[in-house]
Amino acid sequence: MFLDCGTALLGWFDQHKRDLPWRRSSDPYGIWVSEIMLQQTRVAAVLEHYSRWMGSFPTVAALAAAEEAEVLALWSGLGYYRRARMLHRAARVLVAEHAGCLPRTSAALRELPGIGAYTAAAVASIAFGEPVAVVDGNVERVVARLLGLPAGAGADRLRAIRAGAQALVSPARPGDSNQAIMELGATVCLPRAPLCLGCPVQPWCRTRGEHPTIARKPLTPRAIAYTLATDTGGRVLLRQRPAEASLMAGMWELPELPAAPPGARVLLRFRHAITVTNYAVSIVALGGATELPGGDAAAGTAERWVPVDELPRLPLTGLARKALRRLGLWPPASVSGSG
Ligand code: SF4
Image: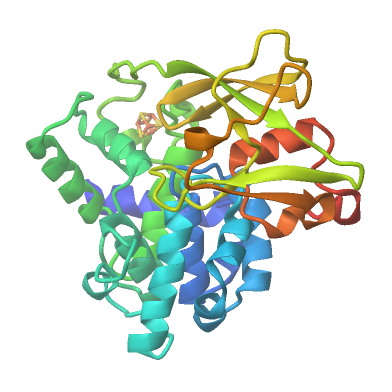
């Protein structure tokens, strides 16, 4: 079953694969960067960032030599900033211990900061031809459906999925096999309403459709307020998150308020989801009833008046970027159109 199924999958991939910039290169570094960016992030968002990143940091050595603020600024908008910090840290380890080259096996790649089983298998198979299966959420769903496994968790189920994914890997083209099954999961074997009629592995599939899935936990709602303060020189007041913050440490954002003060002039309201929280965001104008919190609320933070055209060089949180964009301050006119 698996041999024929794997062959059909590869044939489909050859004809239908999306033309993505990292697929045009065999550079292990570029493949690694793309795999890290693609974790929990839409391809469209990665496309926006990948070319700029590779333009600024074309090699492991260039990334290792960069300041962390530059790295985070280029990552800004992709979220999950720990990934950028780990990429940066791993680049420095590669320069110090591996002459700037990535190790060629998944086992050795896993020794690097921020590289887990998934990324190690993806880079080792795509860049170096190691016949090892990747198992991410897409692969898990496709293989579970192929094998007729119900939705759920458990070590036995995962073992069966890993074995199934491994059996689908072509020893001659392991990287393409892995990309093919991930591509199938992203474009055909969708979580909701899979496109079974056009599926290349339908003859071998024991599910042929959606199996019942466990309902996701609803996001926790939370109200949050920030203030927009600008001066006559067109600068915006920003505050840096503490270095020890559990989320987005060291990133820059609009100053947060304990709550939107009664009577404050609200400039903008929008929603923004981060991990398991759905924020109802208010941006209020500074002045009148609105005062910037001092003392404890601002402890451990730094503040700066930033000219609008310097915003792209700062590592801003995704929420701050969204607010500044909707307020017409991002991107600044001088970099408009650069993405
Ligand atoms: S036949 Fe349907 S459920 Fe089975 S692998 Fe293909 S798209 Fe997924």
